[in-house]
Length: 99
Image 1 (tube, rainbow, N blue to C red):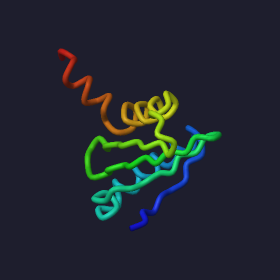
Image 2: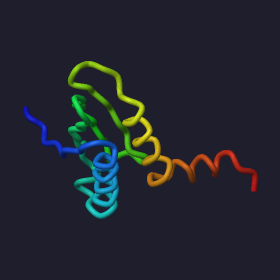
Image 3: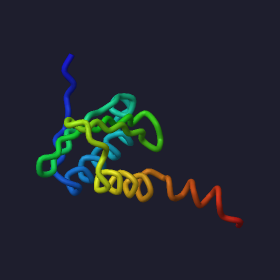
């Protein structure tokens, strides 16, 4: 069975797609309950990124089509997204700050 995916070109494209997923998941319960796929391309790198938007923060899986590990750029983009936009920063501060 073929999966649908959204194309993301480079880190800016990945960030844009993740922002779109976040907004849609806030407003569309059906979208939020599904798993989504991104085809990430940068140069000769092509990777599938699976995003489970039913979890907050989102859960990610990475599969490079050449079998390589996720690049630092992909990791940094996802970490920045989770930290800044998916509530990870607030959760961390709540757990580690003495008020």
